[in-house]
Length: 218
Image (cartoon, rainbow, N blue to C red):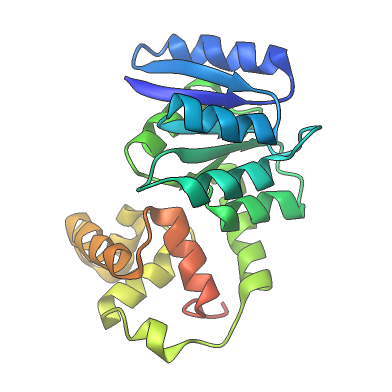
């Protein structure tokens, strides 16, 4: 059973999430919080696998809460799923840099939210397809730095190439087609690359690539 903590300042939103997530059968909502500080407390108390985190909340925003929760955790639990309207502001990108494992839009279909929770619980970070391009573009603008030879030297040429393609928003299947290899080969190289750089999921791998200048201008 996947344990989920809901964080949103609107009770009606939390109630809606609870119903649709628990209807999935393999998800249990173990707690709720209405602001950032209470989310940090609830995360320590309930030990969820996934936290559905609102961004803007009176009394303490989701950015500070995400930073505190990811700094205190051991391993990759809990994973933070930012549920957002995706206004182009510092909160969204700050949450990603603070350690959020994925994003999804508040107006998504119910099954998309369920799938996102399952993916994060399985250790697969995601960025909603509707916002992928904007996330990647904004990171390109904000985090563009000169390539770090030491960072690049951590990866083989093939691993670095796959990380760059991943940072363009490509799926494993798309990368495989681009490089004329099997999808299993892409997964193998990407897994080794993530282990070397200490990234727990695809989203954090993209962050690392931008922060270390591995992504070239297109």
